Length: 200
Image (cartoon, rainbow, N blue to C red; front, side, top):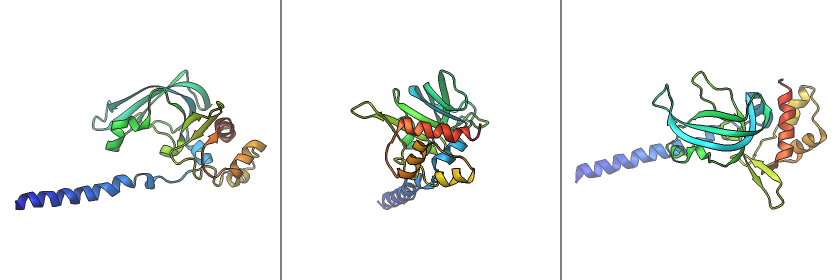
């Protein structure tokens, strides 16, 4: 009986220690605005997910990864062919069960960092550089990241002004007025193109 009580005490202590760690993962992400995300991205593509699978890394066999392939519809920065494939590290047990939320048929816009020497990549700012695209009743396309675009445009205007870059009137208006929530896709992609052009 005493051993059983000790076991349950240890189990509760272990679960208590683990829960905050996993719950704080999103808190460890440094907020990035769109200008910072664009600068950190090697490729920015919009497309639909055609395949997604979980597998061990071919070299680092203890690492779980998800391999995602998109059918590319539009390339906003970098080079991409008709398809774009990347391998992303999966560190959370919960994400192993849902392939990091990637699903076949999803329409997404991804701001991807350059692959590491081991071929691992991810959206810039983790979930901040990954946008799901949805359509409203009239067919207009809107994009939002996992943070619902919170702080996405904070400081963008000031940074651009320091560089002497002038945004188009439509992009300047978007940066000024938007605070949170989905952004019309055509406005977002136009602004991304302007930001990406600075580093080309």
